[in-house]
Structures are given as structure tokens and as C-alpha cells.
Length: 210
Ligand SMILES: [Zn+2]
Image 1 (cartoon, protein in one colour):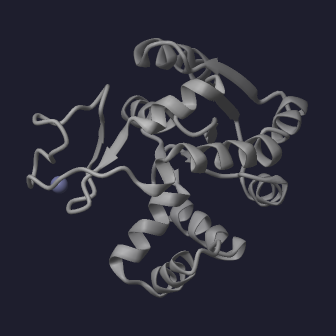
Image 2 (spheres, rainbow, N blue to C red):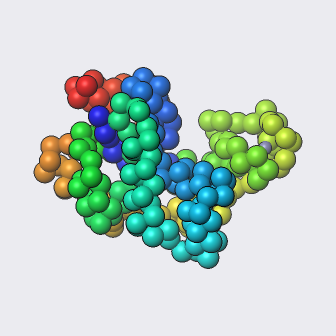
């Protein structure tokens, strides 16, 4: 089965995707992670993407589409959870013409909760490990457990940037819900519940598809 997992920044998608992978054996296809891994491996796509990202530009749609297709075909998994995609109508057009999507699950959280959750994120600039000053605290406040480097807040995680991204989500990604609804694949899960309870709700939806 192929699933779209979406929701505003800070809704807990990554955590839920990990739980789904563990229990259903799907491949977690996050376009952001795939691009980062291409950059780390220094592939041609990675070099192209890195240059564009450093210039503050978006990676072209066809590059991302090729990554999605090649990952899909190289995975012997029982299907994919696609996260961070589609963000707009054009991307949805590509996805629906190449894949049978069984469910589009939105994890909703109120805007303020989203802002607060992201504002709590910290990152180690050395090893890139992620922390959260409320939920994933380092052993010593402000210091990476692994290498002792002082943790930082990414510029992306500062409130003004979060508000900008939430606005784009509302304008471009949320309208896709009407399309999912027409296909009877839309499911909405309350992301303000505990991690376990959000997962229970998702599990109920997936159990009906399997
Ligand atoms: Zn570190």
C-alpha cells in the first residue's frame, strides 16, 4: 500500500512515519531526506541540489520526481509512505499518475502548537543530531550528548520562518484535501493527542486497507 502522510510543520509526521515503517514494513520516502542523502553521497543529483539549495532556490520538480520513481522501484518494501510530497497541485498530478495511493492521512495541529513545537527544536551543528528542549532533551542542557558541541536553533525553526512555511502549507498543500476527499482516500487524525494515541488512530486506518 502507498500512503501520503501530511500535515503542517511540527505535527509529528516523522515520528509517526517511523512507527508505521516498524509495524507495516513500508519504505519511508521523505523527499527532504532523500535529497540530503544524495548531497552527502556527492552524486550528480546531490551536487546539483546542493548548489540550488545554497543559492536559496528550489530543486526542480523533475529532479525530485526522478528520485521518487527510482527509490520506489529499488525498494522491495510492501509500499511507501511518502512524506513532504506532494506540496502542491502539480506534484499531486505527478504522484497520482504514477502511483495508486491508498490513503492520504493528515495529522492536524493548531497553528500555535505547530509554532511552539518547532521553536523547541535544537540541532547539533557538528553531528546534525536533533533534540527538543521539551521532548528529546540532551543530558546536559544545550550540549550534544555525542560530541559535546553547543546546540543551535536552525534559522528555519525560528518563528518568522515557521509562520511563512505554515502560510505556504495553507495556500498550496491544504487545498489538495478536496482532491483526496473526492477519491475517498482522505483521513484526518488529531495530532494534539499523545504519540501512542495518534499512532492508534493511524493504525486503525491502515488496518482497514491491508
Ligand atoms: Zn553532536
